[in-house]
Length: 368
Image (cartoon, rainbow, N blue to C red; front, side, top):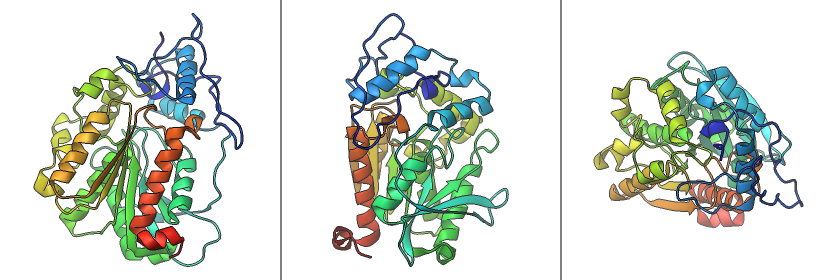
């Protein structure tokens, strides 16, 4: 069968499954035919939710050009197109501004707040995925709105410079600049700087882990919680999950190698803990904020679990949640909106953030 598309490699398909609208059931699994293949997820394959398998089948049927054979600009258009279809989104109040003092100049941010709430809210610094190359405020708009509404917090979305235009450590220095600014000037954007968390998906999870390490090394800011959504934690490609899911589903080993080559072409720097948090010592991890790790069926699974275990060894409170019947990026991809995994993972993420930022009793009561 043809390889699944987009992050595994294929070009933007022409007829992607749309995200289900409110009150509508998701699509059924397509039957394999010579012109419409079944796209297995892993070797041996895992059994996916119907909506996820339909998504992979349609991508496989397109059999397009792998991302890593496209220009960076063309590759970015693949994800932009993939995320451009109609999908239900929660309401939000959105503003844009820049933060001074980044390593290469001011850093752009988007502030996303639940609507109709006056006064300061807790803040969540958010670092997006997309292999350091792809992704932006639009591709992650639905997910960020869900987090803001569910956590009753302002999400500060960092528009870090993508790779290869910026390479390690510039993007994480930009992210740290924003986090430090929010801690010192949060009132300028309606954020209570005493209640901060940080979160990110995929390579954004890598950057989240890096920023918490930087904050420890540099004496702040302080985060009540970090959330790592199917994170990249090191640059080794030989774990059992990398072997099982080498050809996908969705995210392949070859795509991850391409992402790393854009972000950290100097292989020597990949061994630094700020590039590969899994390589941090237990002592370096000690005292980091309590952590939620969400995983799925992808090449990154074993690394994420190993990082969670290492954090526990350092005395950090860690919660793991694994969603076996779904693919990488499932919380971000609009085509997978409303899957059982998506709904449960968003609920877990927002509950965790709400309780960290408000306290369990106040979070239950829905009050500040």
